[in-house]
Image 1 (tube, rainbow, N blue to C red):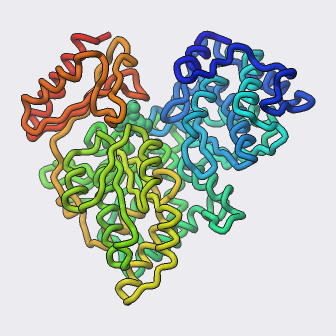
Image 2 (tube, rainbow, N blue to C red):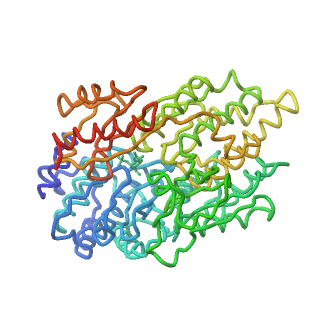
Image 3 (cartoon, rainbow, N blue to C red):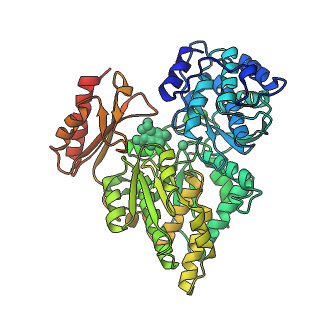
Length: 576
Ligand SMILES: CC(=O)N[C@H]1[C@@H](OP(=O)(O)O)O[C@H](CO)[C@@H](O)[C@@H]1O
Ligand SMILES: [Mg+2]
């Protein structure tokens, strides 16, 4: 085993595979009798060898993500791992998505989707890391055999995987590598071509529920559009969104898919313009446009030509995030981010539950991260009178907590999120007998929203339709939406450090307090105390080699100074 593999497993697990199992001690897992798959792994990793410079691959928050040309061997091992995951789960279908979301066009990524459309179970992330780091074919085969034993996988079980990719040109080569890993280990697979990330999540759940009493939807891209279009038409019965909306698709996969979806709506149901829809020139993907650009730069995308108070939205490169924005008089840019979508959705769903006569049977929770604006949290707790929970960064954490509620609304400030309805709540909503025409009307809209909202993962298209529905029902323009509360002045900074692993947060603090480096949290607290209504926290990024510094204060000037002061302290003491 190479040393980096050892390090990965040693640091995260007591299960150190010092020696791979042999046929003789294999009774924990059941070996393929004629060794066909083990041979296949050897051959596949001969065809797609790990790069010689021994890249340290890590399956992180967004799966594996890096420069696309480094990723081919990893894509092959993901094929092997996805097949093992499916076998372990008795042949349930697993998904693999090839995308690098909002990253530049030359990057790519591979991530695995579990049977109900959720992110890969955390325990398996280290197995994905383990096999991806095997430095030669023999190590890959050893890793495969170790997993069969460790995870107790019956190789006679069927395995099924579906996969798709975004518009990046490198996706084609990565698909070939992935397919090699799948074929080598006898996995049945379906290539769905180019899709948005949430469409692939939809298909995974639809495939695994198709023969159950609660099928999620037709198992096709067309089925996804039909489900959303039917739900949108029902939710918008007799009403129309106010004015036009322009959608910036980041020159990514969201553009053709949004246009395809619109073909399923009656022509006059929404006045929409799609911009930044050039997928033939890879260099423009996410370039000065898209949800991540708009959120992090706090400015409109390339090609913005909106007049004051025109409604705009931006998807990211794989269409799982969305933010809204507009320009007020005097060209002042106003962002309506994930916190705004969460509060809008929670407010409207709360009203529908109330009006349907279900208020005493259904409770709702809003789940945020520490990056949520403090004003949004106060608005949820004090005005909407809802429970608000704060989790660690990364949607899998939010999803997990939201899934515990009857209705769980979760969004990261960057616009990634959705609303989950528990199975029991869905049953209540669908079996409730309305006692008046007003109750029936609210209930009909609520039922439609349970179909409109993607139950697997944040989905820019589904979230877009949700927001458009709510604005139309509430007769809100962007101005009224923004007026629901006033954001605290805030700043998200970052600082390079010698070793970001030195920055460890206190368990159960939702990453708002540092346990190490020793003494730093006390110093941050001292700085924050100088600023009125100040809040500031520091954590190591999971996706970039930096620590992030987030701050809020009563005044813009104070906020800037506070974040700068904390950043300066970190640079001085822990800088590279
Ligand atoms: C402050 C921030 O926006 N962090 C992002 C970013 O994570 P970091 O661990 O902060 O790098 O990328 C994640 C994956 O896309 C996303 O879930 C998260 O919200
Ligand atoms: Mg994305």
